[in-house]
Image (cartoon, rainbow over all chains, first blue to last red; front, top):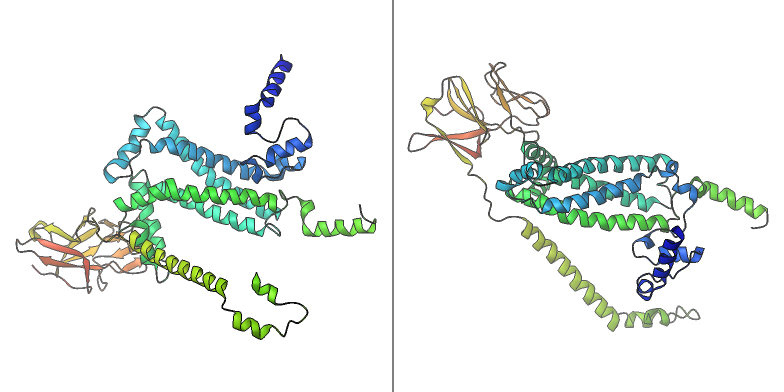
Length: 262
Length: 177
């Protein structure tokens, strides 16, 4: 039975349509499997080969992948929430309540969005600490660390802008306090405060601005930086192992040179 | 690149003067033109974006608040209007108004009659109201960087107390009615 299914799949992979979509060709040789990664627009960001040890849980605790997973959940739950939410002062709070009590599965989607948001902030920090304490931020990975810091800030801004959208007392005062912190910036603080809120107080303009930032601008910027972040892992020599530390590499070079090359 | 071709390794010194004459060739001209117009466009885009994002008309509530008739307020009373964020206080010397918005991070403060002070629920700033030898609105403790500002109080033609939130006045400016 299993063999028949495999045969059907092999047959399918041999069809002209399949081969026009997946151009790496059929076969399970190392070359074909490498091509399957390299010639896929999504997978080509990653290395075609990974050390088996780096796929174990202890190497990374999967924190980066889990963070990306929560991001995907947030996109997948956030878009359906947009179908019922109007970013306007009279409607925002009522729509939030409707999502909880009236819309089918609305409560599930909203809670999943909320909890994933909390999880994402937690996982981003956990990922950062793991990278820091392993020393994986060191050369040649410094630039990817910087990209990571940008992604941390984007995550926090996403969290902050999303906080206003329920338009309840908690949201209003949190954004009032938060935007007043922004006005503590020297010289241009009040200008930043005014531009951020689109006025002098948390009002309709602020709600709309935060909505556009939360649903369009910040996610797009996040996707862009996530792509660079993943791609740089490959460019910087794959996931960090202790063997790829400069000191270890130098020691290896010395020992192989002593043996007269490999 | 034509410029690079001119500098031949055999005689590097000889062609230098020639290069200077030819420095402003057609390609360099167009590169400079292109970069120049791009920079002008970038500056313009920044300026227009800033203007676009700054609203010219705001639909925010009027800063002038009608606080009603003076006789509605007892002497030595503190009345908080949460919607407009002001205190209307009637002291022995007359009426005055304090902003109820904390000078720290903009939370709404609250009048604590049992303590006779104004306190902010967010980060614990406290302000005097009826303390002898203390200016009402002055800070007792907490992170607030400034005292609560005194707001302009006037009487309308109908005899209503009007508070202008956009106009701050010197402390100890009482409105006698």
